[in-house]
Image 1 (cartoon, rainbow, N blue to C red):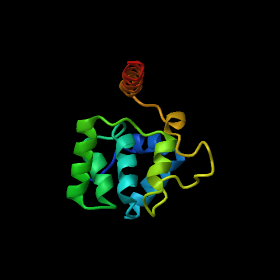
Image 2 (cartoon, rainbow, N blue to C red):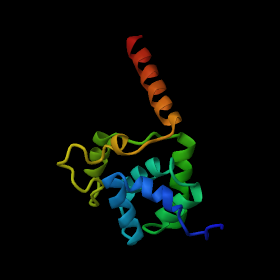
Image 3 (cartoon, helix red, strand yellow):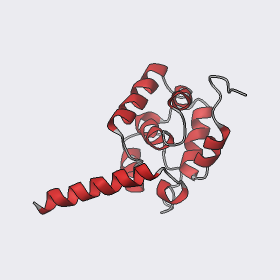
Length: 139
């Protein structure tokens, strides 16, 4: 049975909810809360590996303008952003009012690589980036 346009794959949402930060962001979006520019960026750069583009846009539209959600998802996909590390998320969080990581004092909170399993291509992309960075620094 096909899902309705605004219906999100429940298995994908369940997988994302394994991470407390992502659960927090999903709940906020479902409530129509504006999670801020960086909250949307963090959410989209992670959730794009679990949701279809339409599903991701549909979720982001719940807390923001639809055109902005489409632009953000397009930009993230075009630039192939990797899910950000906890330290980067904390730096983003300092630039806005909405708490992306609901419990920033917990060193495990916001560590999406601990709680979520990404496609192998994500890990390969990160390894390639680190190798290129090491090569550039050695030159």
